[in-house]
Amino acid sequence: MSYTAKPLARLQVVVACTLSAIAALMFNTMPTFVIAAADGLSLNDSQLGALSGMYLGGFALSALVAVFSIRKVSWHTLIRVSSLVSTSSFLLYTMIDTFSLALVLQLVIGLSMGQLFAMVICYFGDSAQTERLFSGKVFSEILLGAIMIYLLSAVIIPCAGFTGVLLMFAALSVLVSFATLVIPARALPRPSVAGTQSAVTSLPGCIALLALTLSFGALAGLYAFVEVIGQDAGLTATQVSTAVSLSLILSLAALLVTARWGDTLGRMRVLVGATLLVLITFYLLNLPQTVAIFFAAMCTLSVGWNIGVPYHMSIVDQFDQSGHLTVAISVALPLGATLGPPLVGILKESGNIDTAYLLLAGVMALTGAVFAFLAQKAERESINE
Image 1 (cartoon, one colour):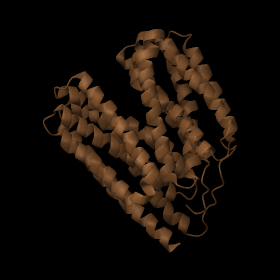
Image 2 (cartoon, one colour):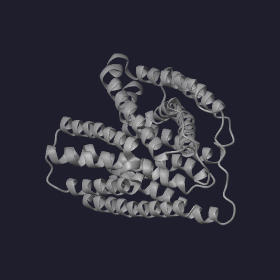
Image 3 (cartoon, one colour):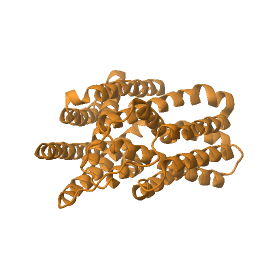
Image 4 (cartoon, rainbow, N blue to C red):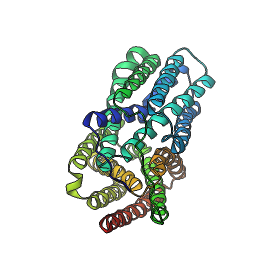
């Protein structure tokens, strides 16, 4: 960064992390949401895929607009409007029974949540200790997603069906409006750098953003099919889901470690460790699968993914002089999540899962090297300053 960033108060961090977790909640609980929607609206597989795609499209479009607008608008107005629009959409959702209206509402919900997600990334990017803040952000999203998946599956859907799911989302959307009590009214100023330094550092920032898109797409592509891969290898659905769930819990613990002691560990160690863990995943998945091997693969994937992404985001932010690239992270993540799974699905369906593993491993190795190089570059520039 080109200015001295200020640390945030703990309450501000907690509220902002909660906002981000609510904004990403539909994406993180999408498999459970679409199962409930299938029963509630009598939808087929293609229609369910369209619901998911419409939400993600609205989310990405909204985040793209935020790249240019988030520093100009009132954050309090944005929070209130997003809360009102999303709450109203979820309540209206309970009154419809047609697929076309559901598509429209999914788009509107995605538009409202994308703005909140981008705002939190901007807020954290303008503050001190971005790695720690981004780690806390990812931690809160995983934690709320895991809690909600359990509540929806075990309690809400059996008792109240799809309507209960929608009312739960509406209640959480109402809570969003209270964030104005803590979140500042506008983005912090981020002065541009005079002379040639801005031009020099903008290219590394763009490269980091591209690497983030590719790496997140590769990870999302693999993660979308891990349950199918496990069951195809002869494991039961219960064994697979248990392994995935336990690996997420382990990744939460790893996130706490990096958030608390990341400075002590050092950025380079975390970056290299995260990349190696993901690469080990591909090796483990190529072995004859047992419960233990599959569980180990899910652990290396979840931990490597979730401790690495916050550091990837912080590198984008460090080379961002205008403040726009940091906000563009909110576009890069859903874009990668949109592109990765279809590519892996095509390769898997054609019987080329080994080719998919090789391609994804290559992407992760390449982007891991890029992030390591950029981290060293950022450290050298910091020393020279």
